[in-house]
Length: 124
Image (tube, rainbow, N blue to C red; front, side, top):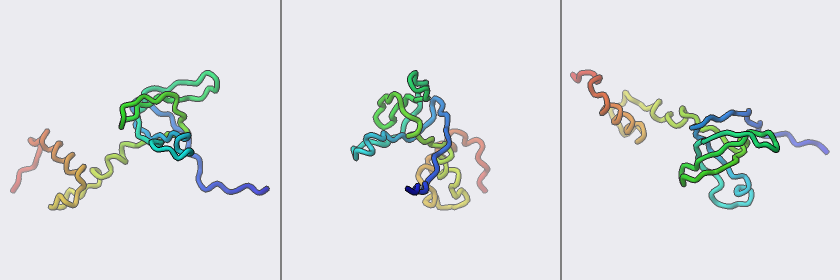
């Protein structure tokens, strides 16, 4: 029997650290069509399963502040800080209309400027 070609490659193995934000999919709930199968979590600790030798992770589900133990990293993906900050990093600061910026970018600018208004250039 001919083997079907793979449409996607398996992601490289990543080692997660305490405090990393990840998206996790509860694969059993996913395949059974149950709700609540995917959530954002924060890595609390890593440990090695005695029987398999595989590294597993304990997470805190951020939306519900729930502890989830023994998470298989095959069903986790890192949520990089650069992705969360992309709208701020690419905000059109030269635009006079702040409506062109996302609310997150405007909020960050307001907070930053309020904290350190002494560094603002003089208005002419």
